Length: 164
Picture 1 (spheres, rainbow, N blue to C red):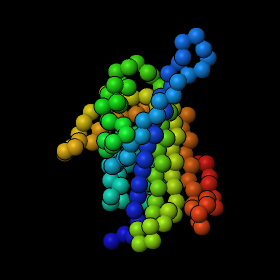
Picture 2 (picture 1 turned 180 degrees about the vertical axis):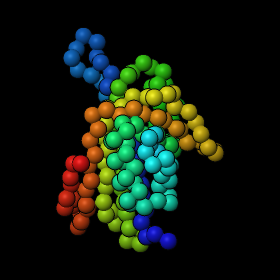
Picture 3 (picture 1 turned 120 degrees about the vertical axis):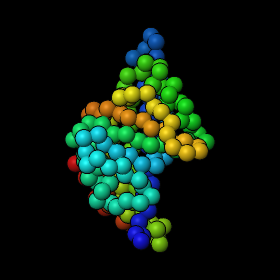
């Protein structure tokens, strides 16, 4: 059994124009990712409860190459996943997605590495609930202007942070 634990919060930043101004209002939606997959990639769904670091790295690289990602999100107390359905119906075409995959050593509860995918995003299709009770929310996103970073965490700070 692996001594690694993976955690993947995703933040979605929605920019709404302010009428009569060049400014925009920003709404933040935050969720935890249960699993993710990429269409055109290695045809696998990455379950964060039972995976390996190399598989996560490869799938995020596939997301950049194929410019899409499907996320399975847990609802939380702060942001109901129904807000994603509302967003898809609102006509907002683009928003920013920030997926941060954190890798921990379970036995020490110590953060070791992170992978961070940041992209301008839009819905490929409307979000849909899937699975058990409570259901996860499946969102399929088209990605554009993708940035992928990897960081090594050591002694309370990042020793190395590289843009790929």
